[in-house]
Image 1: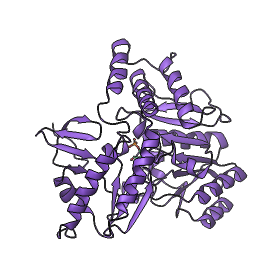
Image 2 (image 1 turned 90 degrees about the vertical axis):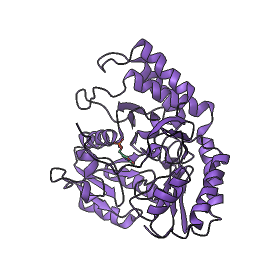
Image 3 (image 1 turned 45 degrees about the vertical axis):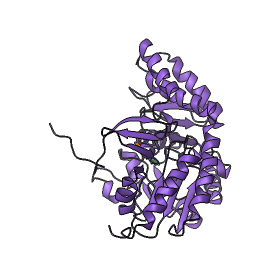
Image 4 (image 1 turned 120 degrees about the horizontal axis):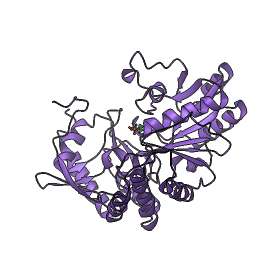
Length: 382
Ligand SMILES: Cc1ncc(COP(=O)(O)O)c(C=O)c1O
């Protein structure tokens, strides 16, 4: 049987990882500033992560959500403390799309409305509801209707106010920092205004922190820079460091009605242990502060490079605008330097999403490789 070809593939077969390093089947070592797409938060093959998961597997790998699972309770406690949302409630799922799907559904169940405001450049996943609020027509099949959704420019307060006047809005969904669009940070004022509008009109504010959360921006959630509290927060990616797990944080005023939400695999024992290990490592290694520190260091070094037109983002969620296609830079020049970085839907933007344990020495290695690559006169040829 052949694989269904969904992705264009890099010519590399990683076999082993350690911290921010990947090793391929030829024995080559790569510096990973992509983190498997913002997923590897505490680094590859961390010994505590391995032990937490294997210890649990030796006891019990899975049992259904019909029984008490102490690992879920432990995770809810730790996540509450780490995030500052200890009075919120946690619903565990398996992926980012699923988290958003449940957030939108919960909002609509709660206020019995069906219109949603989302934003240009936003990406929320590939399931029906998540796709309906994603700003990418190409991904939407005829069955994925977006008839309930108004997609507005990011940071445009007037347009959002008009949408609220014209429609019965159930929810506003927005990324903490837009990732796939090329690292667009919403204005703190804009987020505060959305908070006020949602309160005024009985709509729910959903913050998609699937890429921007879990310490990546130097705060646990990116929206915490704006000092707002959303009604619902979704997370995945860095939460399990590669083990599939997602979560929905729900403000205490929202009540579950049994049967409305559910999942077979969500919050299983192994997934919870992966997520617990992530939080424990983040705490013991102070990784949120590390993301902030190394992120600032990288920003300073990158700002000395004249070929970079703009540096966007916070902490270790960085977009570099080269003002020209970055395809050759990413896929050839940096790759030949054995550096892995991300691209985005904006062809001019390189995305850096390294594990949060990136050191300043590793940041220096990247800067040296980037400078060497930028000296290559072939840069501008795709
Ligand atoms: C902001 C954001 N939301 C949702 C998703 C979907 O997550 P998943 O691929 O786990 O379904 C992604 C994935 O890239 C994302 O970046």
